[in-house]
Length: 272
Length: 241
Image (cartoon, rainbow over all chains, first blue to last red; front, top):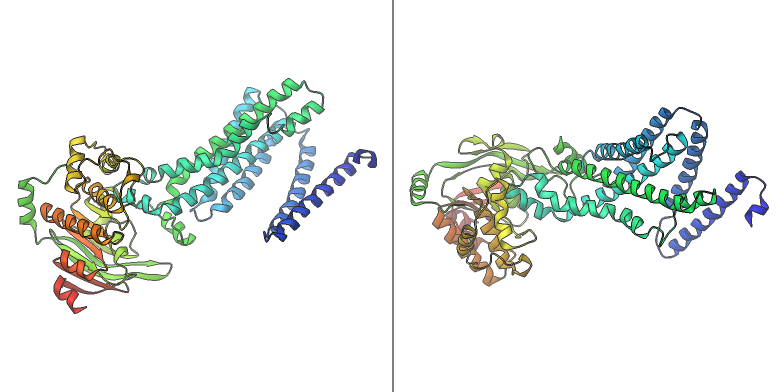
């Protein structure tokens, strides 16, 4: 219907974006009536989202004809931004940004490089940046969820952790059950995506490939490849982040510094 | 895990009176608030010291500073004359075994909990050693029981056995009976008294219950608002309060 009203893709896209924004505003208004106040945060996120994605579209347009190495600074910038976003909810953990940066960087970086070398991701800018960004974004979400869960696990099990330390356990042993719980919690959305693939949802990439005329079986297989890559990248990033973060909640003298009510500055100071 | 042999017990008796634990102007601040303020005390081997005072006086914080679960803001702690920062934290905590206000048992069986401490040093406790430890806390036959099936009193006794499994030189007891009902409180209190007497352990017991402090300790230190008010024979210090 909309396609009949607009002459160019740009006009059509703007109209479609406007409709979805109106829909999102409707959700915000309904939430407000239920005393759920998310207007400011969601409004800002919507605005930010559209600006960012348009900027990325423009960058991609400019980069398409560039050599492949030009993807490196773009993906690195994405990783920097992703680390900051992932670290935001777990600020009580000392030097958490550094944990996210290394976790997401090593996890997703290893995967992108390996998959590109093996040819699973096409050796071209138009594939490396979009698929790489999906891997980084999913790693960011999983790491953020795991760290958030890790922080709440620690804060609600201070007694057990102190008891383990008092019995002569090292920090890694003392937090082991909480690292396991946090890692599993972070990976639940990724596992659910894999489980429900083709039953509950048909992802956008596959839909786009079919609409563009690709063989539906190949499109389905490639979609699975992408999801499996996202799971591996997220899993690796989370495992690395969890491995790194274990010691960030303890002082050098093996004292638990992440405690409910402890000031972040105190915790950070004790950890150095 | 070994019971103290007779020879060890005689040596310990001979060592009694020697300063084992000494603090020097030990202080701790949290979020700018002084919780423990310049406490200097000496505890001899074999002493049983009650750390008494009202709730929120800083008694538990003082105890946590002793086994370095909390880092002092200033001041020193010496163990047999050695600055405790020179001792690896894991070894220090084994030597100064702590029983907390709540048992905080780990998920699993009683035996798994008892094995935890020695396993940290690569030592595997045998079934007979676990049974012996459990006998000492009057829980014979409980080794295979899941901790979710224990009463609070039983759990606190497992917690005591778990600490004893580490063969500590000092027992730090942080209100070990405060979460128990009257009957369980008396049972656990008696048990602790028996164990520290039989093993001639040096012991610091935090309590806000003055009667308990009088019953259990020979010496007492009274803390208020983080400061040491008095230290001496339990009856004198506690009766003066």
